[in-house]
Image 1 (tube, helix red, strand yellow):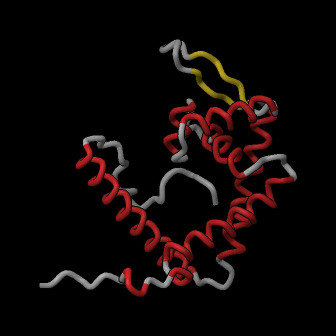
Image 2 (image 1 turned 90 degrees about the horizontal axis):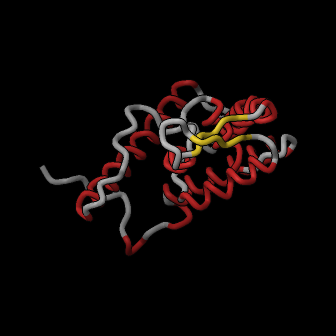
Length: 180
């Protein structure tokens, strides 16, 4: 059996209609909607993700946050500096490894993090208006499938390059709780 024909061809690539372009447009629209909801809490797009991951116990170090949010260490450190300056997190040296700083929310950080899910739910619901439950589940499944395809491709490329750092398949989850 012949492999399936690719959906896109470089010769007539429809930039404005491509899945990648549309997903990017959707991501930008979701981000604007979440930013609007988070502005009254003083949180930016870069700040609410780390707060939520710390609050939910999914990451407690800068390195774990950077990996979960797919950011470089420098960008994560600057974000954590801002969160600390706002009084939302505190850093303490790890008892197990003095080179590592563990992160925890302050009471103000806990209050701020508690507001994030409502903003995320609102933004997603705005963008899913008019969808039936079945359509929502199909869209989610298609997106997870595309994410898994990309992770497999990245893992293969990293293995070929000898770095081997890509995450494996999402197993039905789109990854860490993240922006929108």
